[in-house]
Length: 395
Image 1 (tube, rainbow, N blue to C red):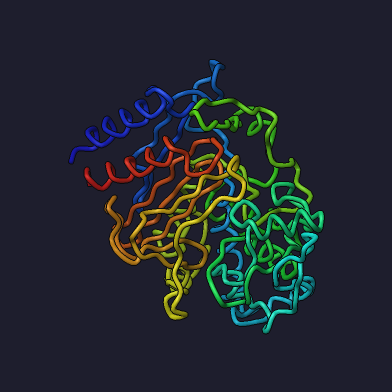
Image 2 (image 1 turned 60 degrees about the vertical axis):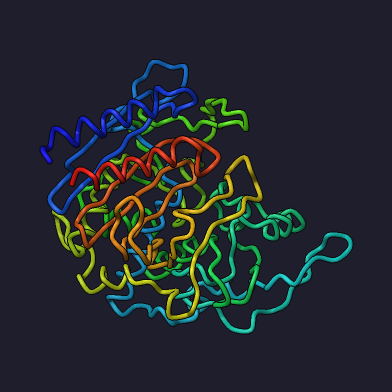
């Protein structure tokens, strides 16, 4: 299929997504192969009601698409023999051993807890099998936080991840602030803030500049406003809603700001077995290990999620009915997806409706970025699926 055909098809899709009734205010989307981006597009505006057009260099709060970069920092430590995946996490971050397993609530709404039967390992944190949960996906964690006065993870401080285990370590896959704890392990081992480690060991070799836990003045001037979609579909810009800048803690699970173009360099590194334009980030065998489903050997899988804070997330699932596992640190599809992604590919998402995929078998990956709450937006998420499907249709 000629290059012009896929470009015009994807341009039309982005325009339609922003111009349809109840659409998205603005979107940036890109696709890469192993050599470079073969599509870069932007449509709409950075903020509803303002006349600043969305551009490909717009800056997004990328939320949980931060996780993969922290995972790469952890795997660099594994490569160097500084840590092992089966090590108890408490060897590096002793505070994690203070976490208790939730055993229900008493009549007054106060939590009952007990010690876990075994220690949380680094592997548990990589696979989200520690028992930690996010408050917006777990009514139990939300109730515990409320009872104990523990702040939200969006505040980006250490107190926000010192919460409770909703099950025994290793018993299930539960999505939570595991990768924030891994960021602390990286900091403990490297003797630097996580952002400084990433700058030296990931951003530098990949030539990534417009990315960080804090923003430069240039990045701040290009930041996209987060919007709220009400139950009736009405969109409201929330210009003051932003992660703390600079943050009290570099949150390895959700703290980065970036342009889509910078993230594409990370996706391309994963497609190229760890190699970057200015040096190697990971060994080929490490990239292969990062893509392996770690839940299947445990007899576990991932599924959907149920919201406990509807203003932050809808309830949902990616490709319902399709079996899925978890790798280091990505969702992996055990069968070919309806959109065309090969079995064993990697993907994840960010709270304000950012989505990416990495298909190492086909040698392509893409990123779709909007800034809308709640998560799995009724327009943005289907737009991403259609975007990905269109890419494969034209390949």
